[in-house]
Length: 415
Image 1: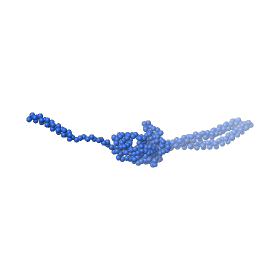
Image 2 (image 1 turned 90 degrees about the vertical axis):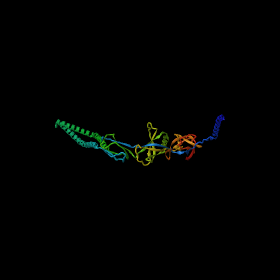
Image 3 (image 1 turned 90 degrees about the horizontal axis):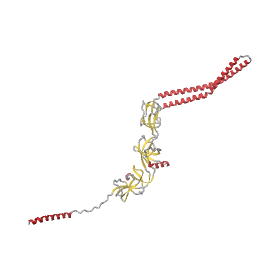
Image 4 (image 1 turned 60 degrees about the horizontal axis):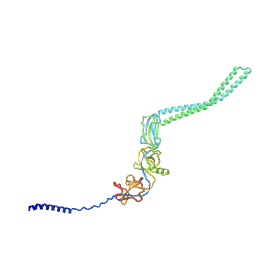
C-alpha cells in the first residue's frame, strides 16, 4: 500500500499543479487593441487681406547740426574772463569770454598815429601844391622882368652907354629865373604822383589800423547765433595762441537727425524725392513722439556702410536737443500695392509663414516688404506672396513643433 502511495502521490501533485496553472491562465485579462488619436494644437490665426499699405522702416538716427561752430583764438594773448558754461543756452551776440586787449590797444594807437601822420602829409602836399601854383604866377612875372632888363642892357651895350658886365649879369638873372620857373613847373607836375603815393600809404595805414580794430573786437568772443554751448576749452589766466580752441556751440534753430537707410529702400525713397512726394517719419524723444520730414540724402557712402545717410528735419518747434544723441526713427514709406500685414509672431525664420487649410499647416514662403505700424512699433510687418490669396488663414501662434501637416485647432482669428 505504501508503495502505491509513493507512485500515485507525485502524479496527483503534478496534476493538481497543472490544473491550477490552467485555471490561472484561463482567468487572466484579455488585452484589447488601442486605437491611436491625433492631437490637435490650439492656435490663433489672422486673415490675409491684400490692400495698399504704407510700410515703415525703423532706423536709429543721430542728432546733428550743420551749424556747429568751434570758436578759435585769433591772437596771442591771455584769457581774462570766461562767462560761457557747458550746456548753457546763449543768444546771438552774447559775450562768451574776454581776452586781454592791452597789447592790441597799444598796436591800435600806433596804427592810428601812422594814419594821422600820413593824413597830415597829404594836407601838406595839397597846401604845397596851392603855394606852387601861386608862386608860378609870380615867377613868370619875374622872368618877364629879368628878360626886359637883359634887353635894356644889350641896347645900352650896343650904344656903348652900358658895359658888357651888365649884360652878363642880366643873362645870369634870366637863366636863374628860368631854372626856378622850371623847378616850379616840375613841382606842380609831380603833385598828382606825390599825392597818389600818399593816398596809397593812407589806404595801407587805414587797412593796418582796421586790422588792429578787428583784433580788438576779437578780444571779446560773442555767440555767432542763438545756440547751446557744448564745450569750453579755456579758463581765466590761460595763454592762448592763434588757432587754439576756445568754445564749441551749435545753432539750436538748425538741427536735424541723420540716419542710415538700408540700400533696399533707396529706390522708393529716391523716386519719392524726385516726384516731390514728402516722406514723413516719427521719432521718440523722452517718450514724446516728434514729427519729422526727410529733406535729402547724403552724396557719399563711407567705407563699410550698408546704406546711405538720410537727413530729417523737424516739423514745427524744435524740442531741447543734445548733439550726438541717438533716437529711434520710424520712417513711413509710400504705400505699396498688393501687400498684407502679419504680426511678428506669424513669421518663422525670416521668410516663412504657415497657411492653415483644413486644420493642417502648409508652409508658405513670403517676401518681407517692411514694417507696419499697427499698435506697437515693429509688432507687424508687410509681406508679399503669390501663394496666399485674400481670405486665407495664417498661423499667428509660435509653435515650437510647427511643421507642415501638423493638425491645429483655431481658437481665435483676427481680421
